[in-house]
Length: 502
Image (cartoon, rainbow, N blue to C red):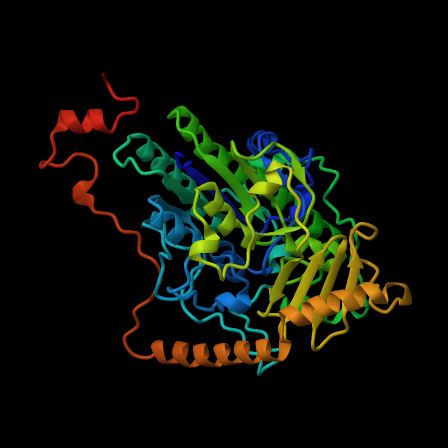
């Protein structure tokens, strides 16, 4: 059986509730809507952890943070943990990354044979939170509400500059793959940083949402004291008291966020257009690392198990999977076994420790009954938090807080905590038992604290004296680019042309 080429689009902080069955009708996203029409769409896909580095490490490894040890945005992704890039490369694939994956540590490849760009975020331990100092705000890298009050229009920004480069290098790579200089199947991962805040968009895309009816949240801002304990911690971590958020700030932020979805749609379209223009076929996956609360109940960004933060879009366009909507809850840790399944690699044989499950059978009309698990042990938390999504239920547990139990079928906005309702004690006890069987929260807390303490020492030491950064430096050998005197000009021009001159 021939192995399919694999084209993976990952975006950053995209709220899955905006993808009830592909992009919402009112979003200006023609390329993603075209992709959705030929994809298996997963309505209830969840991140393994609602933060960039742990969510991405879980997506790449098929492991929850408690197993990968990528607890936060400054936790090392160990080089001995196999990723889908390792599995596919071992099976004969070319593996290439263009864009962000937020690898922390000296290994900046994790199975990719080629990496086309540097990352947008640092690779060292500088962003390590500290559970020994609950409530401490680290001003120089923690989120604050300036992303909301500063929302608006700009023609260039740090993030636009990055994603423009990601799309350019990915498109160039697609053309290069078409030249056929390597006959192996390929896996190209194209990973953008939008629509992650700051909420700044080009006017071209901003103007698309001039009369948008979705610029205010469905659930309005709540009084601080009416929030659950963890939400209060997020508010405090985001320094909310130093900002006065107006309705106009909210509208501008959400408008820019929607505009950046359209910006991404254009960038993804550029890569897909190159694929189609060169007559190449590929299985295409589209997903995000986590969501964004977008002002719902007054919360912004991520770090929460609420739907806006934890639920992400997922679409898979494969000849082995039907164009259907799957409503069963799934996780981004399921992507590594899914990619292996699509490539004909048995994950059970080579990596039985993988915690994810292949989704291919769901795109063939199959069923799934196992719960989906989430973890969070990063900034804004004082102890690890865990969650199970099982059928209509979401059950959240933390040693510091009262349990939370929501019925998402009846209460999609998670406004009614049923944990103390006598009618639901049977369900609560069942989910408590499943959660306790999976997690020892005291042990989890110990390992997180030890990791934080170790990294804090290493970071402080390495910043003294001669400092050699781990940030990835893209390699370019100028002597092998374009025309050089060890090349035959006629051969070069024909070999780099697609289609070639007969």
